[in-house]
Length: 399
Image 1 (cartoon, helix red, strand yellow):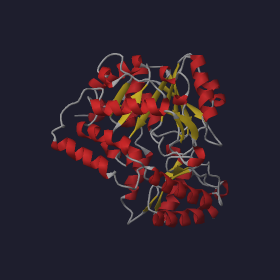
Image 2 (cartoon, helix red, strand yellow):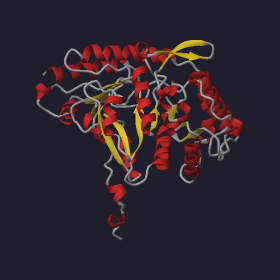
Image 3 (cartoon, rainbow, N blue to C red):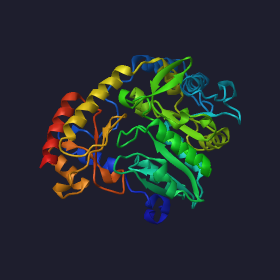
Image 4 (tube, rainbow, N blue to C red):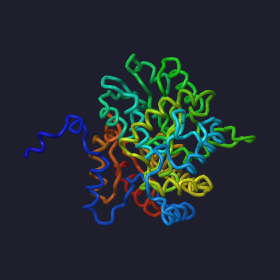
């Protein structure tokens, strides 16, 4: 049989992940200095692991309601109230049409469901450039057009940059802060301006906040939390009335190092969440049952020590690399996106090849952007490995 003849245009239009290509190349290296991985280098907190074990032992291993298990929904609803002031649908109503919270199979699952629910062939989705690798492909899988918003040189998605790109086919703007691959955190004013633009044009603002807990002290803003004020990640979801016209997507994998558990959630307009839940019934069905139960424990775990350690690593990365090239200031996540110096006269992909010759793994910027000018450096690794890798990067960039 000619299987090639059976492959859809949809699948042909999508190239294999450039990150995956680097991983494949890495398999041929002996003990590489890996600054490419987008996964925390600390273990899942014991309290959360114990919750998964208890759930498995209690035979919580079957299907769950599509919207999620009650105990996790209750914690999410309570957290959205405390953190954002949102009056999300109570967990007791989560199985109904008015539910405004949905547990998903990772944040990628939430994005997939949201775009499938919104985008028709010919519609447009505005995304920042640079972007998380999945963004443009998810739009194309829906038959829609990803419209890239050039955020150079500071890598900030602003209303002024987005406005000229909006058309009568624009359904949504996809916002990511702290961002992957840059680690840039938008300001409160940038969030406000972007939301007001989207409201004025009848466009949904989707805010992907998978790294929201990994926002460093120098990029946080004061936010009301109950009767107190606490420094938190700036977000369009914090603005008045945001729950009516912002789709919030958050997850557990990056914050608690359980990326393989595939757990996230979406919250926002109930009418959209109802369509997403319907699609989930026929695709993912539900997120992994015992891991949903365990994720309810995450809200009682303080990750502050890990965040502070990553901030120290961020400072080291910026100090070392800014001496030889331009590095947009990372305010969160665990990435930096330095430019390959123009004086080298090579693309980021060619620079990555030079790094691999020295046993160092980073990701070329062309994986995340229409421009192949920068590399993504992850500092989610041991300090000793990071220091070795930075020594080599500085030497190669200083060439």
